[in-house]
Length: 108
Image 1 (cartoon, rainbow, N blue to C red):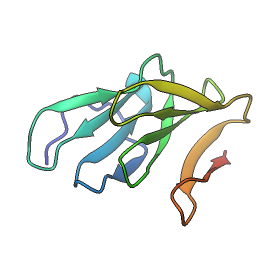
Image 2 (tube, one colour; image 1 turned 180 degrees about the vertical axis):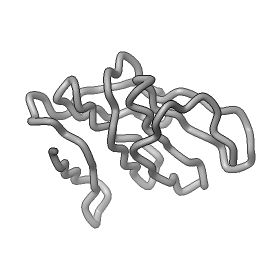
Image 3 (cartoon, helix red, strand yellow; image 1 turned 120 degrees about the vertical axis):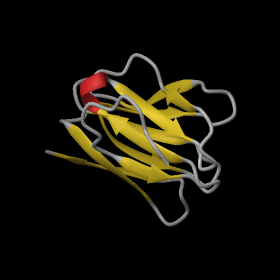
Image 4 (cartoon, rainbow, N blue to C red; image 1 turned 135 degrees about the vertical axis):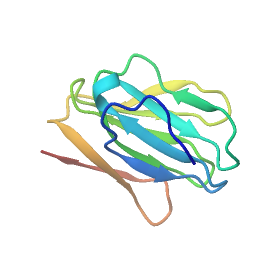
């Protein structure tokens, strides 16, 4: 499963369908790589330094953006992006609770 154009991958998560989600802070991007070797796509917009990612069972993507001090949720079906937490101190990593609905963040 090759991933092209990454500067310094930081966070990884695996979707239920086998797609790999990769945070690339130095490029300000999060990539979704299809498990079948299909095209690589960008997840999220306007990111500055995404470091952590987590996914739900439906492959909605949560993104920790270190420089913006926010956590974003990107809907897998629509691609719409919503800030779900603001003014965090240096969010770096993410984890989902057992029900895959609660999100926790760790700072540096």
